[in-house]
Each structure stands twice: as structure tokens, then as C-alpha cells.
Image (cartoon, rainbow, N blue to C red; front, side, top):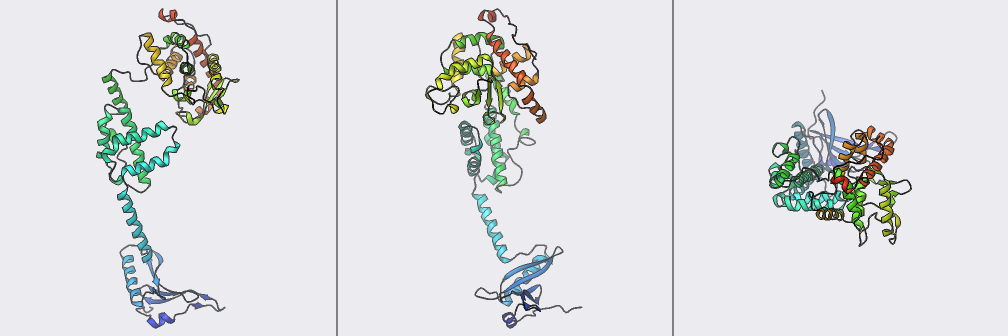
Length: 450
């Protein structure tokens, strides 16, 4: 059995140790054992350093202990003490590392701890917004994020370290508005959840997200749809966007066409295309092909983030031809707004709504209607008065389709059928008189359903 080394080196041997030399005269790294896992390592050229060598979890490891020569040299006695410390760490199950790496790790851990302690929820929210808001569709969305956080969250835990935000804090922000402002509260919960998820990715917090709905907050708060329904019941409001019954559409369209102004033409175009307000007011002439009677809305302007093509009826084309001269004086023809405001640029999102309110008020009857509600009028008409399939009607409204293969088929195969649908809708809107509506008569659809 070989003799176990113990303090085999001396200061003199350390000072005079040389690198190894092969038979062909080339130098190589040579290690001199002192015992207890300590080695003096001499490299070609004479550079000396201390290393600890040991077995940890079945693997041989070498850990540098520092220089053995020069101004910052570690003495033999100190090297032996360091080697004993490494052996104790290995025996306790800790993987030994060099003192330099250990100091680096400790400094990094201290820096991270200070970063975590010094990052408030407000800081994390601002960082999240800075990284993500460029990808959002419009300024209104950006402002809503900042406004709701400032109004409802920061007073409760804006200055609390993001690592300490807990369920109790999230509930303190949500409960006061969950009953009376359910839509705002639900969106706010989602925003808090995303900010906290991002903070976890950044290493600023650990554990479950206290703003998570499924399996967590759903046990403490009423389901958003139920809260909205109850709020509407208390206020005497309809659960959905107030919509005009479709039998009233022909009479309304007749009244609308008698109005002057861009707002009236934009509203009629929106009704005829069953589109959303934002899709109409953001439309550019480059999206329209009058010869093919198509309006192609790019993905970034669609709610579902997918390009949507709208077949334009004869009447929709007439509306566009009426409004086209109003944009001729503008530069960059392709970038002109379909429905420009009087001051240049596009209409505001209130232009059509105010037009609608004025018409409803002038008739002296009817609920407080919304522009979006005309999409419901279209859908009710299509379902109750035509033979067009469910798929054709849903595609006309640009509703999301879950099955990707089915969605791809519909985009390619249903355009001719949707063209018939939109023409039938335009014919219906144009096919009745005020007298017909007052008498309760429903005119037959002029285009055949398919």
C-alpha cells in the first residue's frame, strides 16, 4: 500500500520546482503533491499555482487556490489551510470551487438580492411596458394599460417590491371595482398577471402567480361574465352591444342616406360590410381594389391578428366612389384614409357613434344603440332570414376559427359565397321602405342564398 503523503513540500521545493520535460525536450504541466489533496502546479515557463484535487460525486475535480509565486503569492501554509477547507466542503456534499469563483458567486447573489429588493411592482410594470408596448396596435391600448395601473393598482402595491406581491395585494386592487367595473377589472387582472409572469422570468420573484385566474382567483371572485351580467341588470342595460332589430334597418338606412358628411357615409359602409369601427376608420385606399370589389384588411388591424378580405357589394362601392374625391387633394394616394376627417387624417372612433345617436334621437324612439351592434343585426338577419351556412356568416364577421385546416379552407373556398351574402345584405338594407317597416312587412331577399 503506497505511503500517504503529508506536508511533502517545503518552501524551498516550491521555489525551485520546475515544469516537466518530455524526452524530446518539450515542457509540460507538472504537479507536485503535498498531501491532503494539495498540489503545486508548474506550467511551461515556470508559472506556479496551487490546486486542490479531489473526488466529488464520483468525479475528479481540480480547484485553483491561487498563485504560488509573485507579489500575490499564497504561502505554503495558507495553501494547506485552503486545501483542508476544500476537503471539508467535498466531505459535506458541497462542490468546491475556487475562492475567486466563490467570491464572484457571492457578489452576484448579493447584487441579485439587492436588485430584487429594489425593484417595485411599478418598476416591473414600466419595464414590461417598455419592452412590449411597441407591439400593441394603437395608442389607446397603451394609454389604457398605464391608466388602469395608475388608477387602480399603484396605490395598493405600486411601491411594494415585486417579489413580495401576494394574493391579498391583488385582491385589494381588484375587489373595489370587480362588481361595478367588471370589464375593466378583468382586463386589469390579466395585466397584473402578465407583469408578474415577466418579473418571474427576469428572476425578480418566485412561486405561483397571485393574479392567476384558473384554480386561484376564480375561487375568490365572481366569474367576469357573471359580474358583467349582474352589473347590467342593476343598471338596466342589455348584456351585449345594443343592436337595432334587423327589420328596422331599411328604414334606418334610408334616413342615414339623407344625411350629409363623412360620418354618415362611414357608418353606412360599416353596416354594409359588417365591419368593426376600428377597421373602418383605419382603412386606407391601398387596401381597396375597386375593380375586383375587394377590401383587404391587414392582420395588424384585425382583432384576431389575421388578414381579412371583405367582398364589397354594389352599394358599398357606390359609397367609396362618393367619398373618393374628398381625398384627392392629399399626398401619397395609397396612404390616404378611406374616410378622412375634416382636419386631415382618419375619423375618430366617435364620429360614427355620434352620427348614430343623432339619428336615433331625431326619431324619438329606440335604445342607446352602438355601431358595433349592427354586426349583431347582420348576424341575426343572416341566421333568421337566409339560407347561408353558419361558416359563411362567421367568416363574414371575421370570427376566429379554432381548427387551422378548416380556417385555411374557408379563406380559399368561401369568398364567392361571402360575396353573395354581402350583396344580399346590401339588397336587404336597400329593399324596404319606411311604410314596409311600419306595417311589419319583410321584403324577400333579392339574392339567392347558398
